[in-house]
Length: 99
Image (cartoon, rainbow, N blue to C red):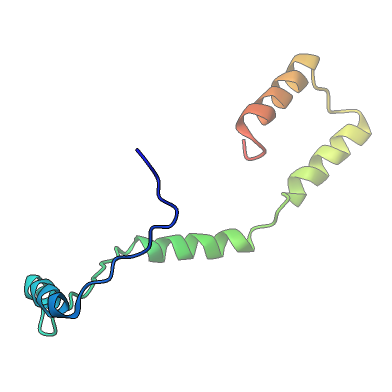
């Protein structure tokens, strides 16, 4: 296959243009010869918007949980085994921070 870089658009002679337009407009439906696009949306977008609004109001960090763990660590009551720590790190690396 050969690619021609100097190839430009073909010009249609004036006498052929009207025939091409008639063929095109005859194949389209509608009153003006122009079709209109239509879309139907489900009600799911309202649910998504409501959930997004709720998510914005949630705190980024669960302050109560962080404070309780901080107190447990400072008082010496929190003990995690090396296996638990390694498992949590591994889960965080694979699943991401949301897990």
